[in-house]
Every structure is written in structure tokens, then in C-alpha cells.
Length: 305
Image (cartoon, rainbow, N blue to C red):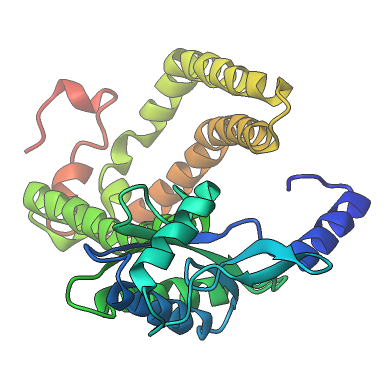
């Protein structure tokens, strides 16, 4: 639901409160003897364990499914499967599945070796943490199935969102420190000094004014044109009707222009201020080697000693 209308959001909340969440989970159970009494007992045990997890509203399973049968006063409900331990159990199970072909591919596979459980989550506005608990609990059940020959798998929109968020958090916790470490190592190997790692901009500040002049008069125009073209290209996506794409296009184009403004206005000011602050300090070590070139109008035209 991407509407910004308060009335439409209220109706959507009432709909979810009445009929449950629209991001259900699916649990697949694979066992070679699903249609047997032992296999269905294992499925019933797993269904009960899932129902006991906090945050789950209901579990639709082959073992708790009902069917409509003729009664004295019309159609009545009765359990789809016979009671455990009843006579001719497996034959009656096969007959019940055959009477309800709509269940094939939904709660039971066509090979009768795979069962599906539809897990309906509770509606908890403003609370997204319970989904993490539910998904972790389902994966714990998958690691401890009710039987040696039983395999359990959990998926669904909510599980995929959780997995993407978990992988992003993991990658950020690993890649960001790793990239900073690699950059620091490269600077350390190049400058062979801690100052070259901590203050790379200050060390190379001797050519700040030259770099700013060249960027403003030469490359700045190309940078501005390319950024504007990219921003306008992204803003074309705002003409669509799919709200996520519209927002993505608008914010991406705005980010392009904001980055351009920082490149042309904010960064030069920071470089000039940083260069002044660095030159006001006495040079020592490797910084003296770079500062020895400060008097040249074109530092790149003569070697530094």
C-alpha cells in the first residue's frame, strides 16, 4: 500500500486487521512417507509447533484442513483427514485428497511427498521486530525437524525482506571497515608515514588552488553537464504510476544535483581551509618533501627532492 491518503490508509489497516497480513510465509515439508500415518503425525506436530510461535495468527495445514460435506440441514464442516489410529487410515487419506483436487499444489504436492503450510502473521502496526522472531523460530524448526527423514524449508515475502536486510547489515559491517582498512594500507605503503594516511588532503594541499582553478574553468563544465543530464534522465522515471519507482527517480536525481553542488561549492572551500590550516603548521618528515614544491607555479613540472 503506497497511498498517501489518510482515508485509504485507514481502510487498508481495517482490511489487514480483519483478514490478516498480506505478507504470508510458506513452509514446505518434504518426506518420503507423507501420506502415511507416521508422516502426517510429523506434519501435525510441526503444525502445532509453528502455531505456538508468538506473532503467528494461523497456520493452514493438511492436518487441520476442513471440507464441506452434505448434512441434514445443508452443508456442514468436518475435518479433512480421519482421526489418527482409525481403521484403513491411509486409504481414507488418499480418498480425502482425491475428493479435494484444489488442495493439490497448495497444501499437498501432486507426488504426495511434499506438504505446504501457509503461515499467516499477526497484524501489529508499528512493530516489525516480531517478524524477525517468527522467521528465526521457523528456521530453528527447520534445523530440528520432527523426524530424521523430514526436511523443512521456509520462505515468503517477509522472509525475503528479512534476508535482504540481514545481508545488507552483514555486508556493511564487513565491507565498510575493510574498504577503509585497504585505503589506509594503500596510503601507508605509498607515503610510508602515518601523516600520509591521516591527512592525505593536507599533504597534497600544495596544489589545491591550481586544482580548483582547473576544475572550475575546464572540467567543471563537463561535470555540471553530465550531472544535470543524469538527473533529468532519472527524473523521467517520475512520470510513471508506480510509487516506489517515482520516489527512487526523484531522490536519485536530487542526489545527483546535490553531489554536483558539493563538488563545485563545498569541496573547494574545504580544501582551501584545510590547506591554510596545514601550511600554518611546521612541516616535518614526509610533509616537508611535499611542501618543498609549494613555491612552484606548476608543481607537476619539476620533481620534488
